[in-house]
Image 1 (tube, rainbow, N blue to C red):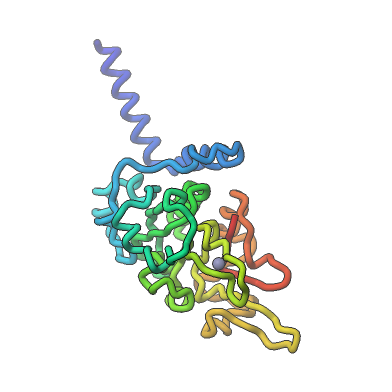
Image 2 (cartoon, helix red, strand yellow):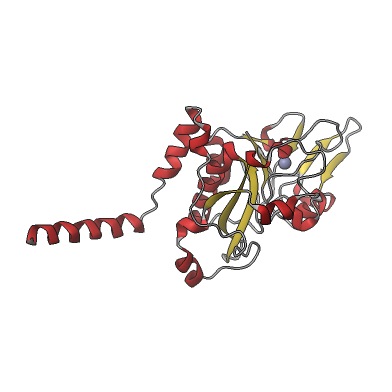
Length: 262
Ligand SMILES: [Zn+2]
């Protein structure tokens, strides 16, 4: 009996210690399983559905986060009716041939440059949902700043409006700017992070530069120091690269500093 009590106590002590550390074993498993090609395992969904109650874009306080539990603040869900209604006719445009079942709603917390904690949300392909959940959990723990993360549908799926508001977003059924081919965002396999400070930049033959969004021209040259800047070798870059994403900042013909894709 005494032995059993001692065993239980030591187990509880160990569990509470383990909870206090940053345990990314689930994240590592997601990484391994994606290498192994077990896509369904990678598309795990949380038990608690909070679509209606998740206040994306709003500031979160520690009491509320503790009440929800950290595992419910970084979670992957299937697209339910509430979310489907939000995106239909916007990011999920008429003629979009991506089955809704391929997409996932990902809930995260993130911190802005001032250190505030905010509720974030995104929609992506199920093959990268666990990647994104884990990456944003690690960025949150490290205090990596992300200003805003709400569905692009809040901007009528208008990419320029979303970028101009420095909104981080992923799925949007649209063509590559200035071309007829579908963007990786159409599949939910590309994400734009802190886009106002990390613009798309294209040098034209006549020496002029196309910068998107236009008001980010001052961030097109990357030699200064400024908030929300993504740089080669920083934590954001390393986490995405370690999971097999490509960074638009390393493309040769154009530079898309906000963009990671898989
Ligand atoms: Zn992009």
